[in-house]
Image (cartoon, rainbow, N blue to C red; front, side, top):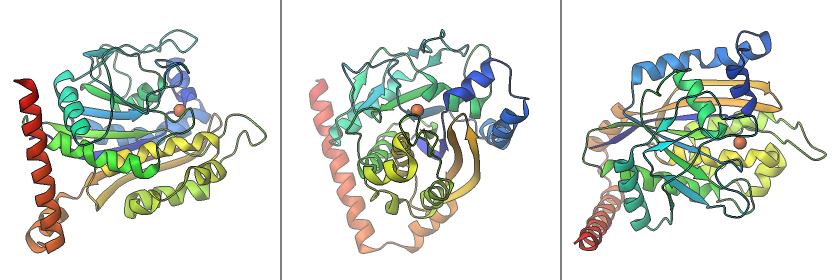
Length: 319
Ligand SMILES: [Fe+2]
């Protein structure tokens, strides 16, 4: 079966993409940012995922204000880089994984999360910048297929952190019910604290960001209780992008191994945060053997029953 083995959190600052595209990575200002991702690229090259699910937000590139889906899953075979005003970024076309994406759409929607299915979409810096930071700058092709999941954080009301976290759990159930053996990684992107306009433009709150990263690693449920207003007040108007990291975190084990973290300020006008979390496979197998609590078993049986019923409905629908 397919398995989510790790989650990656990363800012997706557009100026990072511009620095890459214009050969500025060795300039001292940008070297400080890019040097924080060297270990991440090594980790990714070693991990060699078969598929990446990238949770990001579209910045009025694929969706205008005329239509903004809350959660949009990219089910197409490919996703060209969007023209964000100065031509498409010089990065390879992102290849999708239509079979797994269709399976995720079925599983997650029947699991009562109403995703928008997108069969044609261009992707902007929100997706391509984190790809560069973790996969480098391939000329012809990205090293693995990608399933984009676009989240509305640009027009009120965005989804709550709790909803995002629960969607992560539904994504995990979807991936784990896919029969092919695939190593899947999931990205949560955006943030960290920043505000790009208004009297508080330039706001960065490192203390709040670092506490977010600590809790993301150790106590993500605490983060699910943060209301939108707190993100706005503490992390700036665009800091709300951080709810997308909770989709990634929800798709992982409750206990994870934090294998890498990087934080620097600023990049452009934004705090750059990055984290790599691996599912604690050893710990989870120990828990499986040692901890067959009544509550755990009952929860698992309920999930199994729900999955069976989902598949019954799904197979009836395809007859
Ligand atoms: Fe963004």
